[in-house]
Image 1 (cartoon, rainbow, N blue to C red):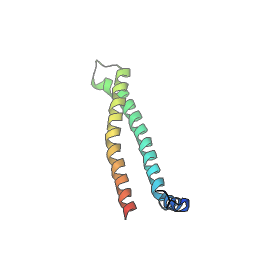
Image 2: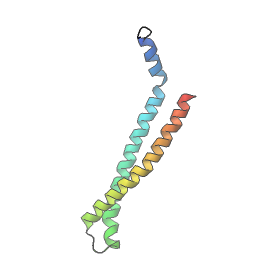
Image 3: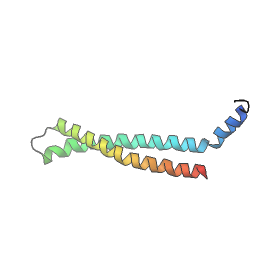
Image 4: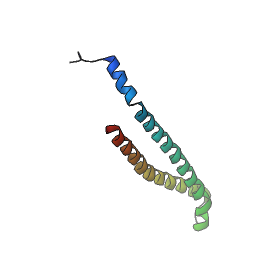
Length: 95
């Protein structure tokens, strides 16, 4: 069953795929940074703009609504971009 296992062969396979592993880590790191920026900017925009648009809402509620909106937008946009980027990297990896 495992008689044909070779540590050297396994290490060589990992070393050949190292650029793709690094690219995948980079894509996830950039996605995380963009998500944090979108969520924070949604909170700031909601905190500043929603009380001007809706008179009955306070600034703390507006900030919470903006953060939820920015986070939702971030999840939607980043999910599509991340999956497309990893799909393109996977295609390059297969060739």
